[in-house]
Amino acid sequence: GPGPRPSPPQALGSRTKLRKPTLPKAKICLWEDLPFWAMDTIQQAQTTEELKEALVMVLCVRMGTVDPRDAIVMDLYVYTLQFAKEQRFNKEQTSAFFSIVRRVHDACIETSLGNLEEVFQYFMKLVFCHSTRRPPFSIDLFNAEEVQNITDYVTNTYFRHYKLYKFTFTPQIRMDLCLSYIGMSAPSPVEEEEGEAEEPKLLEEEVEEEASPAQTHVAELKQYVTAQLTEQVSKLRAQIEEKLHLSEEEMNRKLAGLERGGTSKKDVKARAKKKIGRA
Image 1: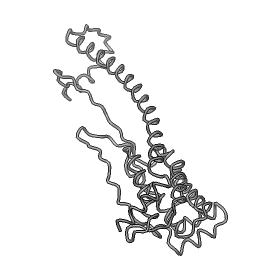
Image 2 (image 1 turned 180 degrees about the horizontal axis):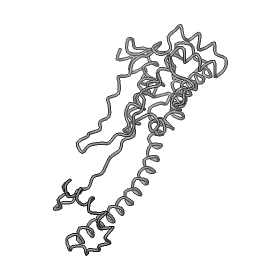
Image 3 (image 1 turned 45 degrees about the vertical axis):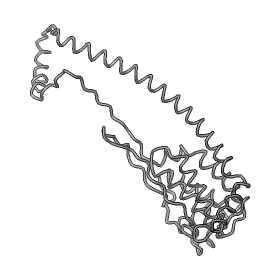
């Protein structure tokens, strides 16, 4: 299916701890999502609509619903298969590449927390599981050039829009802030009811009473706290916006560094020789 359905915003308690889920171990995923019999149906599709209909039949996913997330997932699948066709992948390569992209997406939307670097490393491990002959751990479906093309494509499409996928498919986390004033007792329910009952009477009689010094002090204290809180929230919002901007730049630098550091043809060949030597 198109993956887990996002839930409404969740309020976090004071003791709630958010932890990143452990990513599954990278392994061979040939024929797992698109079995051999389904590849004939996929490859016979001539138009985008025919391809979508074939995917609906094979994967039992939804299409044409009011939920825009279903359309996003379908577009991801269609573009993945179109890239495989442009690269002239055979049935085995197409099935494996499709499953790699699908597992990357599932890993992304499994948590609301940031896990870009972990998922990118998971993606690279999946690719290498299908580019080095070392049974039963890996197979050599893709050569060095195909690995480079796959990495460039997924990096420039999926990972460039990683935060959008994360925002769209994961639950929003909400934190509620509760303030308590030390040294002040909360009004009892009886006092609140009496106050509500006396209010209309006071309005009718138009009685004006001067506030006691204690009440004046409490009102001034609340006003001061509210003003300080508003100021701090404004500063915090500005800091968050600045951090988001810096985080976006850092993400782009990391992606560029990861792509340069782990996907060169020499690196692919070196890893392949290293794994074969271990076998």
